Length: 302
Image 1 (tube, rainbow, N blue to C red):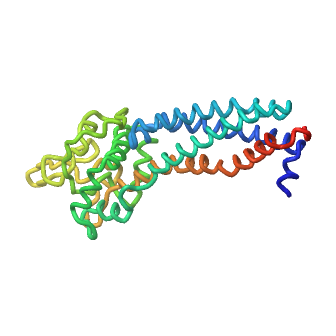
Image 2 (image 1 turned 90 degrees about the vertical axis):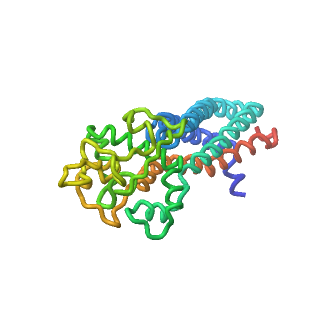
Image 3 (image 1 turned 45 degrees about the horizontal axis):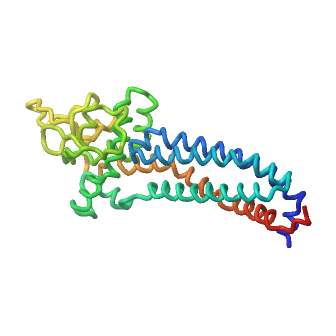
């Protein structure tokens, strides 16, 4: 009974007016989210060009949804059932596509490898998982994408803001991307769909480049470690593209890399958008219910 009271003609017009403003705000948000998803280097490095598709799709849906605001108000004011049915149909299409896109984006927030495995395999000396299990994690395309994101920040570390990102990811818990003193060369190319924009060409040429001696990562301007201190033989760097004071610390069995932290950092950039896009569901249901009521109600009430 309360529903039908809410959907009387005067109430409907007021609701439509309010929903029009709400929809406008949401449309602007979706438009902005589309621009962000299609242009964020963190996402293009980590997940690839699929996020350009997601972003452009959201921009298109935002424009379509925004374009339906005035026809809805006009249809209610003029009691035009055909126009209301038209708006309802296209709003339903927009809604379904938003849910599909949000669900697809959400799939990228789910780790392929458990955080327990990642934490153990990123140690200098793993304790719970086998070398084969850890190798699958090291060599996966998903991990390669997050490594590209790390390499981008490392390449631009002269920029204080970008250097600070790596410093915060490292904190006191980890240093560099992969496990310290555990370099395993991987000459495979990065996934073709992942962007290489802004990344040093040498780093981008292969997934993992090691130093001249076993377990050492390649030497960097901020990290030079000796394989033989007496003979002054440079091994490379004990840490994998680390920044700050941690690259000067001693490597222990429990010393670990920050690949898992990089994943958390990138995923955190898209999780709020997924929540908002899916969260529109209940608001749309109310609007759709009222539209259905208007379309189906007895014409004598108009």
